[in-house]
Image 1 (tube, one colour):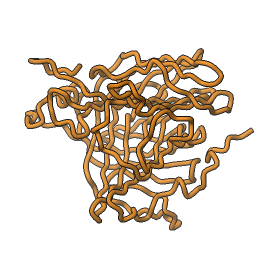
Image 2 (image 1 turned 180 degrees about the horizontal axis):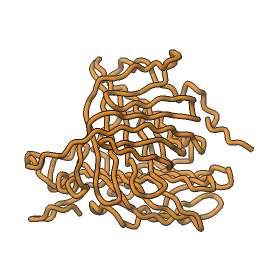
Image 3 (image 1 turned 135 degrees about the vertical axis):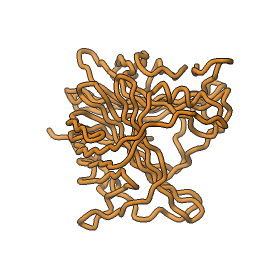
Length: 351
């Protein structure tokens, strides 16, 4: 019995809006995490986001490629958009500057390509940067390189539509968001040295919603993975408020072709900027019982985000790739976490 990879959604739900609605704030974003099966490196988030405010539309691009030895390749900038229509005149392309996402077949196949300059640094440099006062500048000029990648992704499970799996709390108002696990193949070339890519990943497609509001934000934890047998999971947990009330928690688990709601327990909240080797295991509670997933980070990237400009309490975002174990199966997966971390006096690390 084959899976309905659309999950009952319409093909147009996975296409790109030709024009963002001229409202106060409108947005559309496509992003992805990818991991190499060999465990040498991964792409802990790359994405394009279109944002319309005050009648004008801007497009931002970000990409991070990280290696197990601590090296990081990255870019983050505003760029000119590419045409939304594909060669057949269908609205299936979201891209800007060097990064391009194309929907080849809704909910079945997506293609991503990048061709442009990137900076080279170490994850330790990123940790030092987020710990540096916002008005201080680094004396180190980053090395630069040329990155080219072409990856074809084939979806492996139906999409998880956020808000559809018996969530606890409230999600971002007005946002339609779904994510989907996939398998991918392709090539990646850094300064002319080309390597084949065989691995997996998670893509996200979202439209609308109020983002960037941190008045009621206390951090989050988000993980997902696909296993060789076809089993998979995903969850997002926004850290509860100081009074203990739930902000948002939702997840799912797929086993034997059946997808069911799952709430994460023993959430591994971010407590410091640790590049690799951190235990991020957790338990998923479903109607069928509890499932324990063992997980450990092996590559990470870090950056300051949001409106937290105070160096003594910055909001730090971690994007990374994990090693996972579910019973007798092993795989890789994605992780994203955020937390308001503190900088000890006289130190350049975060905790």
